[in-house]
Image (cartoon, rainbow, N blue to C red; front, side, top):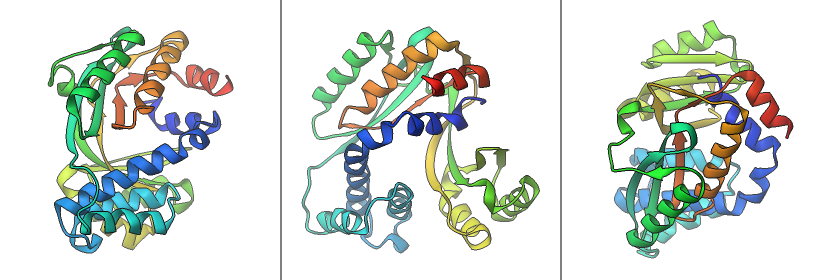
Length: 249
């Protein structure tokens, strides 16, 4: 998946991270509160909460914000959110999965539907594109932790399934149910990861040219701008040349 590893880098270079920082922290806080409410407020006893805290720290979220989000759950504060997954198609038939947490599913469904429509896509039924993805755990490390062979050996020892190494870093893939154990084993061997999370990994991809990628980025930006939306995943494939042109804009 040529484009995927460069996606975050492009967003970062385009300065989007600064604009969405407060929104990002809000979404991370929501996930922490939900995870703590559903299980134990101690991250060591609650794998989902541990991953949520790890993800927040990887985005430089202050410890005070993390503690506040956990305390909210203990105090029984915060709305009762439900998790909903939407599936649809973006420009050029790209598959899109949107994960949301909402206290008003009618509002969220209406907003997500209109966002798809306004940006050249259409919302489908649940399951309409899900078959093109697998639920996987992904652990990311920078290139400095070691060469591809070193990371591959650590991944095999940790019980991972696959490793993608490139100039942008290493992504270690594992079964979704093994993410907590694999990330702990990797941490003991390679140190703190850059990111540890559950993702939808495409099993089939759709190749996009520059114009289609520009349209797709508009759709993703609009979806991510919605406070109820937690993550947006697509199955785009783009050449290094197209990604370089996007980064230069």
